[in-house]
Length: 226
Image (cartoon, rainbow, N blue to C red; front, side, top):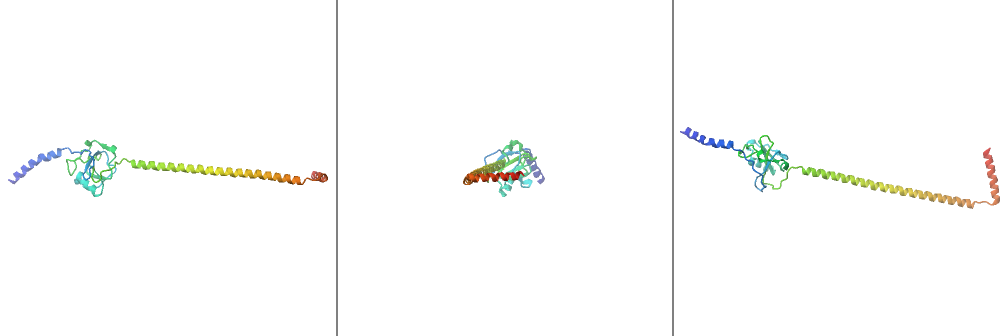
């Protein structure tokens, strides 16, 4: 009698089990994040920015993965085949793909999609703990590079300006010094000429003295000739 009841029960459950196994897992469509509620963000071709947290595969579903990621204070979770991933940002927006790519039945809840078994599609969710979450598009890195490049160019430009100013100052100083030297030289020559003229003027001899000087010069020249 007991065997008959058990057999009948199994016969009744068989169609239900068959229907469950035959059912296509559903990838929840993307929805706006809501505080306190998990919401699907769609199916993505990558898990960039997310890390596998090593959740036991029999617990992998939106419920189990959400708990694991909330425990480590990560606002984003994703399922990819038998794995659970957590992170602070969604994968790149450009990796968003058609929901049909996420077609693997979650181990903990077969009616729900957990990406695909090849890990080329991931079911990404928001835990509900943080509404505003960025996409991992790498824009921050690009901005940092641009900022660094701009700073470098500014520094180079400033350095060039300083060099030009320094060169200008040095050139001006040299020109000034050259001008002063020239002026001083000219002044010296003028003074020298003036002094010579003064000496020559004050030393102009009388006619008698001129004769004597002329004779002396003649004797000196004759002596040199010998």
